[in-house]
Image (cartoon, rainbow, N blue to C red):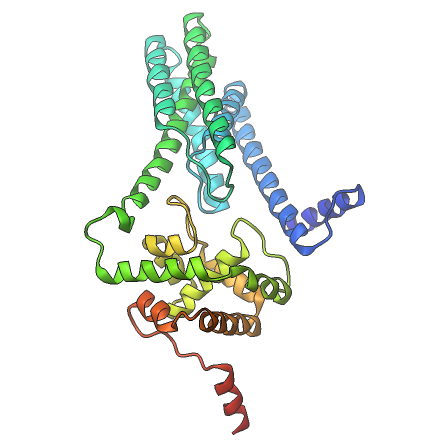
Length: 349
């Protein structure tokens, strides 16, 4: 049902002059509309629950304050839409419960507002790799987030002093929720950064050799030559947030290691060297197994075989021996794939 609504929306946009000409254009608008409707559903559920609990006013304040911080300062992003919705609703309920508990404790609210605002300012921003921004935009967002933290602090203190405890409690409880989101995102970022090979003395020789091989491949390979084949063999447009080349590299990792889609996802999340090969940020999650499976289904079996053959030919043209890439990466013999010549010989005789 949602898909049909989105398709009607896209047709409406096209009818009124919005440029939606290619399947890639459609894919982008599809993804944006999915996010929009997901947010509408989340907010609607929260508002309904709040209205039933007679806390609609407080919830509106919390949604506004949290939204400003999450947009400009970043924070924890759930891996799936279901988890995102569940956490959003649970966070709203927890925030309202906390606000109800602290609204009669003015000193506690003021101290909490000071401490929490200081944490937001000190911790800094967390960027989302799926939505990369320029340094200028990042700096601007950081300034806005700090201004928002100071504004929240001043507002909470003034409201508490003037006796408007309901509004002050809503702001302070939102700060508690946001600090949890920000701290979780920063902890995940720190955990992954701590595993980088260049910063650890325990990295083994094989992992270092793997890093060098993949760095050479990333630097010398012309990945754009695969785009034409990727975009002309699929049955429908690939939907963001992961681009075509990143997904193709993911299937290479799967092919090289003889892994299932779930095993591929886990291996990438566990190994920083593979994340660097995919040019992922330290806090980004790998494409999940369903995305990998969908991508391969869109390209088709013949399309994937053609891509792997083109990759093999490209390695040969670059003078990069396949053994330096495959054997080093995987630590165990990869699956044997017959070359095109061998397949032709098999068919002949």
